[in-house]
Amino acid sequence: MIRNQLRMGLLLLFPLSSTAAAGAPSVHEGTLGDDDAAAPEASTADVRAALADSSVVVLDARAPEEFAVSHIPGALNVAGKPGTTPALYVADVNHVLRLVPDKSRRIILYCNGLYCGRSKRLAAELARSGYTQVRRYQLGIPTWRALGGVTQVERDALVSLLARDKTAVLVDARPASAQPRLRGARSIPLPETSQAKDDGRLPMTDHNTRIFVVGGAGAEARAVAEALARDAFHNVSFYDGSLTDLRDVLR
Image 1: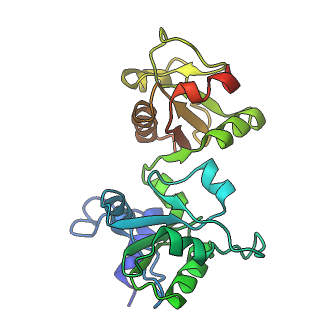
Image 2: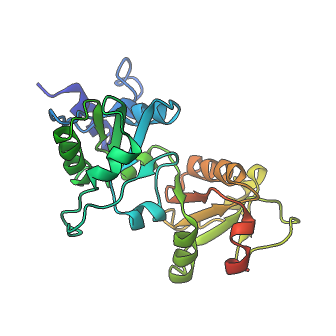
Image 3: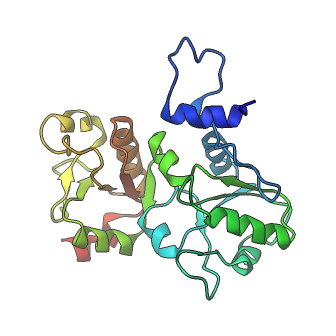
């Protein structure tokens, strides 16, 4: 019998019609069906609930450099275990012991999706260290984005990526009249996100284009980023800081 979790995982790729899917769980509740004793799976809905619950810790099991480029907002990163290669990267359980000393606390791990082994390896290390409430969001960052989730970018990574990726679009969530301006930024305040699809401010010929959103504050940037994600742009990240932090390097 095909497990319900696996069925829902397939629905992410092959959704049923609304009639056929009546009574079935939401795709946000789907998992890959890849449970193990060390850490059963968590769904996208579980991760969203965890981020709103201060008793749960969401850990990004990827390298700090990847975390800086894009991570689930509210997640914490774990330093790498010394001596591991990129192919067999494992986060350092000793860092988790410092971050989460209570081994009975609920933890959700994630990494780069279906075929990424980093959260599995960290889950096994945590189980050996006595952690008892660990789950894995094995669908990871790709599904988080596919289901409308935005990611967060860190300052230094944002500056570096804008310098290297000339296809990336920098969006300023403030009105066009707001000063000072950032070099190369396109003003798209929240009320104009749909209009920006028609007037050339958004990359309509390639919805894979990397889009970074900044604003007067992180909340303003996030609101615009989430609106863009709802308009089918699925590579959107926001900077959770003020323009003051970026003015000297992006002016």
